[in-house]
Image (tube, each protein chain N blue to C red):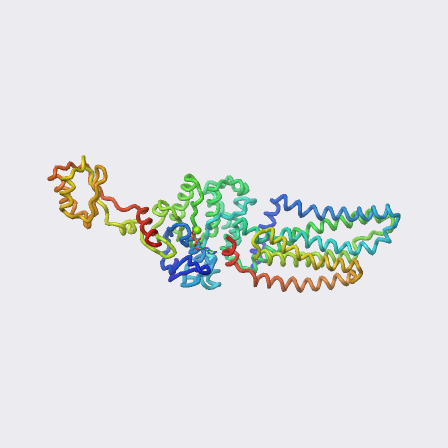
Length: 306
Length: 244
Ligand SMILES: Nc1ncnc2c1ncn2[C@@H]1O[C@H](COP(=O)(O)OP(=O)(O)O)[C@@H](O)[C@H]1O
Ligand SMILES: [Mg+2]
């Protein structure tokens, strides 16, 4: 659905997005994760046919976004939720959605049906005639998402939809995104929220002007260090530590009553280590395996990508 | 050019205007004041100076021109919002993300900013004609209005001048950074009309029906040219990236 090849955008001297190459498959939810100024907004604007790339190419739904006709077609099949909701505040939610439905060429009765379904899904049908100015931030964000869905787009671009919301409103928006996900639409989600990316996205690209990492949340976690084995003991004694070190795993660290080991092959090595600990008089309470959190992954890449 | 999109944009702008009481009041106030004020001044002049309406008739011709200027003034207020307003409210990006062409957006915006001032001007003009007729009927022995000159002013001059002003303002406002500077630059559009009015008053030109027809012809050509100019100058990308 989305394919980019060396996509680049410069603003004068500054390079906002550099040599971006990735692919988003039909029905996939792809997250672009990155700090402020990483180029997320610029990327979405290029893909949605709002601004031009200064280098490279991108296709969305088979249309070249770099050509004026291609961009026009992309605008037909895409829905965009920009970083600012930009609703017409004096107008009602219904009128806002109806206006955009018209511009997207969605005819009645489908337009009215879609608006009713979307507002119903959001729990805002009863409030449809109130001016948007009277809505809370979270409600406005939901309307902005509905506005991008009113014409049943093939691909949905979301630019940090929960960035300015309180936790409760963020949660509501995330639940809505999970619903959208179920409908099988292709989604590109910009976010700097790790938890959001992990919970909603099939794959994540970490952006820092360049794409510094790409993969499923699990794969990314595996790239920071091998899965880590944690052994909780009654007490970590020097004898236990020595016995484990003798087996020479790559890294051994004691943290309170826990031993943290970085093992190349946990399944093969763990039994030997457990036996060694027992021989050294250590009493094991629990052996667990943990992978790096997405947060560790993110921080590692974002720092390296500087 | 898909007319249903043009209509949707114009209709949306009208709906927003209806919900902005301040803008609505400023749009209506001026024409009503002028529409009532001018006839009152005529009436007071007649009774104070013991002259007759007939002797004031050369003056009333130029009054038609007043309404032409009025529509230009009112239009600048509204047209400045047309594009800068959307930018300030951040609604331009979602609008540009739709498959709507530059021509459709500009024509829709033009109509949305052109129709309300024209309507308000007609309201003022209606009041003006009714009151002048009421005050002058007895002394003139006939109804002064409507006459050919005012019909040409109202039917041709005012819409074409309004359109001219909207287009100038749309061009200015797709380049200006905020509503106020758009209004300030855009309001310069009034100068040629004032110049013409002054030229008429000091006798350089006669602002009779023929003169208005010539002005209307020139405006019609300019309106058409300006529409294509505004479309050529409309740079969606710059509108999004230059103002942040
Ligand atoms: N219109 C613009 N003009 C100049 N520089 C810009 C413009 N838009 C973005 N940039 C720069 O490009 C970089 C990426 O910005 P952006 O895409 O907004 O990042 P993000 O959305 O990830 O925060 C930033 O350094 C920003 O300052
Ligand atoms: Mg951004």
